[in-house]
Image 1 (cartoon, one colour):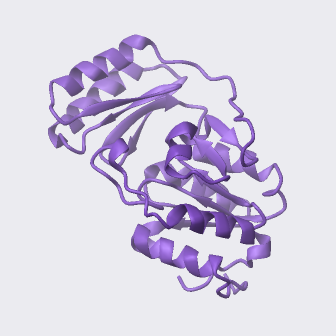
Image 2 (tube, rainbow, N blue to C red):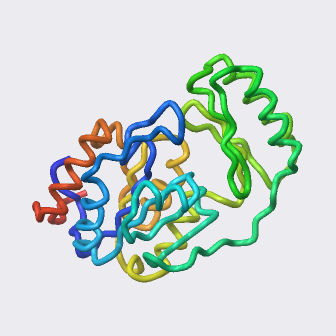
Length: 242
């Protein structure tokens, strides 16, 4: 993609983190953030008059540690929202999974060296990138644990299975952020790379904007970063026919 199909003064940009802004790492704590990325996002947010948000499955504290710049953010797939850079996080009331679920997942991970469980405020993730053989038994275990509990779902991700509240989605994150300034009144453009982003893409399209899959529109995180840099540096982003 050479230009943004929506003029920047009308756009609100929503960016996934892992696999979109940065390359996927073997472990969540091993992700590498290019040194220029925080400054790039700061400049791009200024061009968008603040209408830029990171929408991620990670907790806000982790996103802040990787991107130490004032940005709007949605963490844990929307369970934590910060519409105003530097503001307080908004957390809707959400259920907590039984501790036994995580203990069972940790026992399965221990039986498959390389697998690990990442805790979150309202759920957890079973990662099996370094233990592919744990993928199918992990899915079976989590689906059995969640069973008919309508409050939770098992969501696939990059070589991972996540237990999260059913009411939480990246669509909810986009919709709630779009209801607040500086996003309100703009057209959302969501860029993501996997199934966890599909709801966010759909919400952006439903609001008259764009839902862009990284692989189809840019190819790689590095190519996306190059495109964002051109926008931040003042490259043309005029509206074109869609």
